[in-house]
Length: 231
Length: 318
Image (tube, rainbow over all chains, first blue to last red; front, top):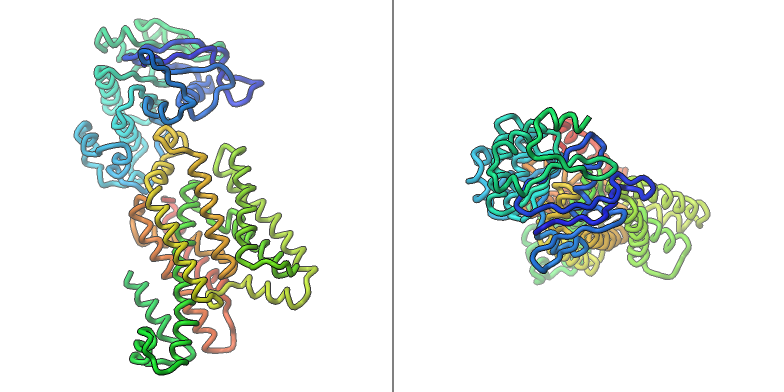
């Protein structure tokens, strides 16, 4: 389930690419954090990796043993990735349990999360952004895909929910899954790398996203190091 | 449901030829001794009521489908220019006197516009752009119809103008049956694709990662919409308001639900609204000097209803 990016050029128009020639390999079983200033191309990179946007050039694939899965095969690709978008959807008439049941057994998700149960009969449009975001994370978990791709998952969350999200991600990794997330939550990232089990941290990575590509940063970097690498 | 049953019975029972309960039952069961009564019932009232019901259901569902697909509460078959495409087809058939039947012309016009929108939708990333594209097509098609109108003969112009006012009253029993079959086809498709449509409301990117094939769903929606709008338009005229308003009326009275749960309610409301509007048309025909065309009734009743619904719910589009 290793994710390979091979000389990948990402962007909306060929004459102004956002990321140029990214070659990197994301280990399975790890948390892969993408940091970057606004407009650096984090979301575009994630959309590309989801197979929703075509890359300008280059290619990427998942290698699992001898099997190679390409995003061109949308169905097979979809069996390996689950996605949490940065904005929870608006104007959705579905109730929380109706939404969860689109991705699997909703009772399973309701039992894994302390607050979901009390919202289960509420409509999504009646929840706050933070509550809706937690539902969206629980939904993605429910798909039980190997790769969990999250775009700014903590942006709307209060401190308690942020910690719950990070621990849910750890659970996903302990079960053998992998996660990739774009975030501005330096403190959360730092704390997670501080406290996560050793085996998981070894497979994990932090990258700074800018036009020249992805620049790796040591997982043991201090909060100050992370901050100065961004500015 | 109750409203629908009541509306249907009233619709069949009342009319310019008065019928008592017993005569009405006899005519329905086909054992009437009066040929007038059975002709009135089977060739006028039943086709009219069935057409109104099926057109209401079809347009209500298509409105729901368009609003989901474009994630825009103001979407509807008429907004996308599909209805005007049908009008163009009929205008060419009626005004230029081309020798093909109106339904074929209307379906052709709708599919032509849909083909254009389909091409546009491939190019445009956002459904909202596609919606604006549809509006622009609608203007262009409307202009073409105006050109055709201004150079048409007075007689054919009159036919076209009356067709444009809309009516459920010109349908034959066969046409009504075709509409009912269309209802079954569209209903079956909606039920089958309901979870894709639910996923689609969560966002385009997310829906695709959840396994919704974007272009295939889009193709199916455009094809079905084109055929169904073409059918309704050729039989009843370009009905503007039903598709847009029915989902809003439903959401006003019921909590919004998943597509599978909502489709029954939206269908019933579409049928009730169409029957009620047609009831008013028939009532004004029977009483008083003014004839109120169907489209005028739909707009006069419908526009305030939509405004009221939006007014009360402006915090929550869903």
